[in-house]
Length: 159
Image (cartoon, rainbow, N blue to C red; front, side):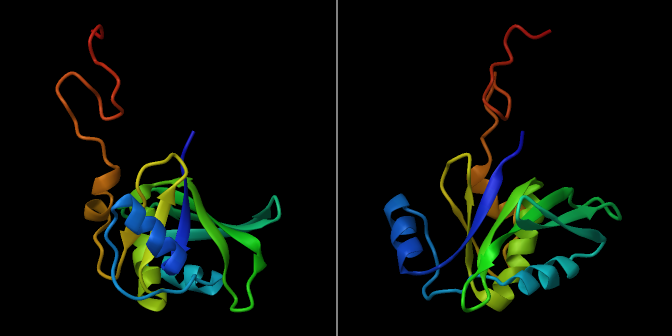
C-alpha cells in the first residue's frame, strides 16, 4: 500500500494552516498548476516515460523512470473538474517521493511554491524553485534509532 500526496498552492487559507503547524513558507502566493504544467514539468525530467489513461473519472499520468534509475514511478491524478483558470485538483497516487518532489520542484518555476501533503499524516512540506528532493523530504523521514527500523518496528527477536 502506498501514500497519496495532495498538491496545494500557497493561498491565505493554506498559509494560515501552515502557520498553525509551525511550517515555514515563503512570502507571497502561488497558483495551482494546470494539467499542461504537469506534462511540461514531467517532460523536463531526463529518462522518464509517460503513459496517460482515464480511470475512475480522472485523467491519470503514469510516470516511470527506467533509463537512469534516479527515480522510480508515480501516478499523477488530474481531477475531472477544472476551475475557470484551468487548474484542477491534482494528487500523486503513490510512488517515489523523490520523483514527486522533483516534479513539484519543476512546477514551482511556473506556479510558485507548492505544498505537498501526505494522506498518511505528518506535517506538509513546501517545495520551492531549486529544492533538492532528498533535502526537501527530510521532515518525512524517520530517524534510524538503535533497535528500530526506519518504520519504527523493533528489530528485537529477529534473527
